[in-house]
Length: 208
Ligand code: GAR
Image 1 (cartoon, rainbow, N blue to C red):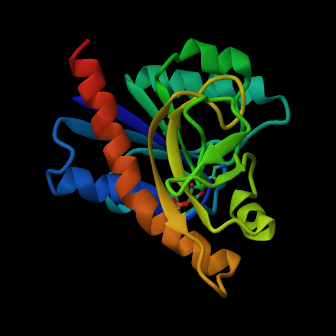
Image 2 (tube, protein in one colour; image 1 turned 90 degrees about the horizontal axis):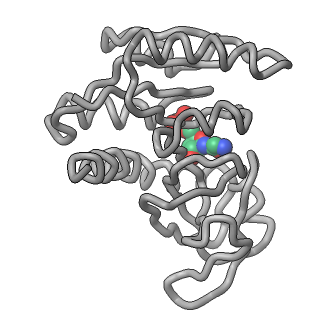
């Protein structure tokens, strides 16, 4: 089976989507072998425990290499094939990322372009919007006044919020949306998207 490590920092609703997809047979031949959180209070750790998945709180050091070295020990120990960043709010060093080519995927709550480092995204209705990157993209999209945002799953490369896109989906911004209402709708889409991305990765790797 494809052995996943899921990294979280918060509620872990996308971790839950993966757990549910595996338990319902929607993601055959896949196992979550490890859940890691950089925050002790992350609800994602509770979800892992509920489903008897080994989980650990790994605090993130100022010197990121220290935490990454510990993470690497865990990834080796649990024989992880694919690292899934599901609301993990830390940025890896380029040295760590280059050790796992096409083996780290990230869920990003905005639309990222096919030209992975491009600065704009063209929506399905032909509108050109900024490619929102960073840790505050839901409020950024609202403030920018765009009509459409969404979510993207991509392979991780050293450039932040860039890398080959696996799948993405648009979400319309409604009149009166707040950061909370908009992020809720994005998350509802993400719960499908993250499962699709793991399926796509698995297909790709089966073909060799
Ligand atoms: C998701 O919306 C994900 O796209 C976002 O955090 C949320 C996690 O939700 N990720 C980032 O912002 C990464 N920079 P969850 O904890 O309920 O799965």
